[in-house]
Image 1 (cartoon, rainbow, N blue to C red):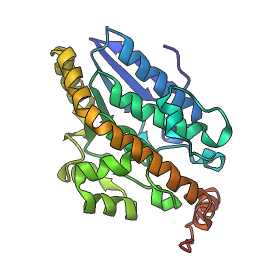
Image 2 (cartoon, rainbow, N blue to C red):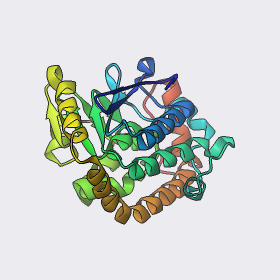
Image 3 (cartoon, one colour):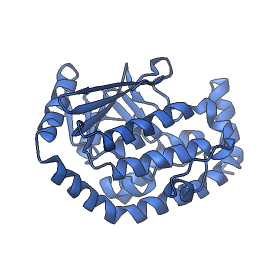
Image 4 (spheres, rainbow, N blue to C red):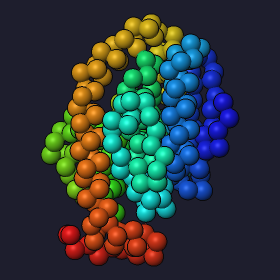
Length: 272
């Protein structure tokens, strides 16, 4: 498969998606969202692939959505995703692309492993959370980050993060938006494991190989049985997040956060 912003390979029945916008710390723009979705479709349909790894090139896994596109708007109806459609009009396109990725990751009958090789912030962290297993380099840093720009988390993370780390810890991570270490992420149950930097990808591939050599049909059925129960809540979370994002985009604080980003200064939020 030929992508502009992704590296793609299949080896030993393992597909590897590598985010490849190093100069932007693998921030995800509209085309990159579409390419991720296409790669997920190939993983689901290609019988050669029995497990998949998602990682990043350079010093970041992904720092989330490309904030240079934030002024376009990022909210859309989840029904457009459920019906298999794709919104093309400016305001909703990016958000619908995100929702398609969430549902594709949940419904792909292959195990997906997030290999967090560096910074995983905002939407980058959310992609990792939607994987089935999460591992990180010891030097990696994670963070929800959205609140730093007067936004709320998306990609169903307002539902999934509290389920993983508990309600109060999730609120702390979301409300403060600070970065935290891979070891702290493992301590609170967000990661399945942390490996030293020099052996990180080797260890992740060992896990992927074990999965790929296993009864992947049954593993897929187990994944889908687990996720089927969660699907209505995930869809509802996406709806709630979109509603809240519309309100955020209309707020003074979001405009201030956007201007502060472009002017490279600290924002002065007023709580409105």
